[in-house]
Amino acid sequence: ATLPLCGARALRKPLDDEPGALVTPLFLSHEDAREALAAAAGTDDPASRGLLLEACALSSLAEQLVAGRVDGPFLFVPSRRAARFCAELQSGGSTAAVPPTGSRAGGAARRSLTSLYGSGGGGAGLFPS
Image (tube, rainbow, N blue to C red):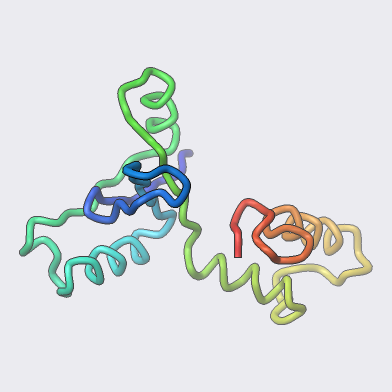
C-alpha cells in the first residue's frame, strides 16, 4: 500500500525563510486539495481555467526526489478531518477512538499527539499550530 498525495503547481506559495523560493503543498486528502484549488481559482470549476490537480504516490515522489528528478520543497498537508480529530484529542475533547488515559494504549495515543504537535501546541511538532 502507498500513500496518495494531491497537489497543483497553481497552489505553490512563497517560502517564508527563502526569498524567491516556492513551496508546493501536497494534500493527504483529495477533497481538501480540490477545495484549495477551487479557492485559488476563484471558481468551483478550476479545470475551466486550466488548473488541474495532480496525484502521485509518496513512494514515487520519494524515489524521484532521491534521483533528483523533482525539485522541492514540499509541504505535506494533513487532512482537515485528521487535524480536527487530533486537535480534539489534544484539548481533551472527542476521545471515542482513543482508549482511556490510564490505559497503556490511551497513553501511547496521547504521547503520539504530543510528538506531532509539540508539548505546548506552539508549533514545535510535525504539524505546527
